[in-house]
Image 1 (cartoon, rainbow, N blue to C red):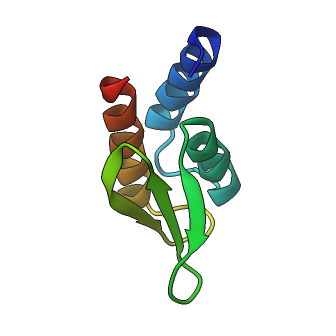
Image 2 (cartoon, rainbow, N blue to C red):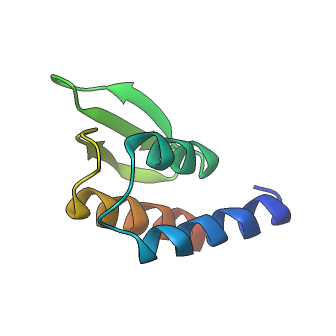
Image 3 (cartoon, helix red, strand yellow):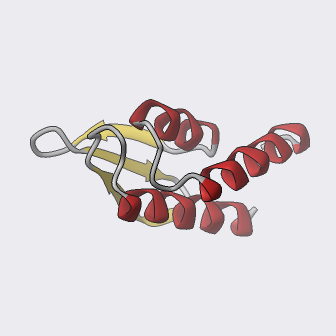
Length: 85
């Protein structure tokens, strides 16, 4: 990821941390795509995200707004990917 993209991603991640209980699924989806995740559909209406450097898939239930537990998992997954770069 290029430096300016990483800087913007970190800004969006900081914003996500402040509003954990008010995050729309589309916002989280765009953020995960920017971090290099790919979305595949899981069982039912769940979304499953994979990243080439991360072994464990990330599962998200896309109800609006997202539950805080999913937002926390998204933040942790993106932090993990950023640390590996």
